[in-house]
Length: 158
Image (tube, rainbow, N blue to C red):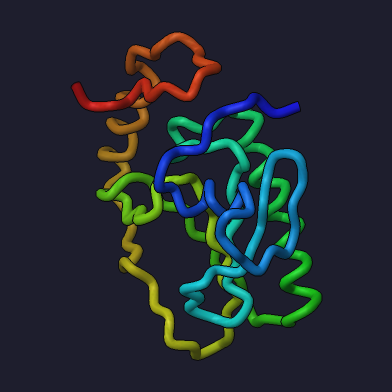
């Protein structure tokens, strides 16, 4: 059973989970809800959210994050079978600097068509191998907070 958490006041996704706000729900289970995005950029644009409020990937429990990805996988198959897209883009953003605009964890599934109007937000170029090695060392040797099971944010700026 998922942990009980209070909905966040004013959170539109918590209102959807609670049934206070209408949405076109495609799937729901004990931990997640999947529904059509009411600001869809393509037909079938779907959001998957955890039922329990978590602002972002840093604050969601590992169990809820895993449940969200299981539902993302299920929805990808459903969208593929129903809409037969040429491709699928997944998008998940965290905090304003990461382009998040609704502060309840969510994953976008965007069915794609060859030549559609969506474009990559950046150009991929090969990174400097020495810079990658330095970044790897920095990540692997950084002090780590103790394992947390609560939704508090170990990475919040002081």
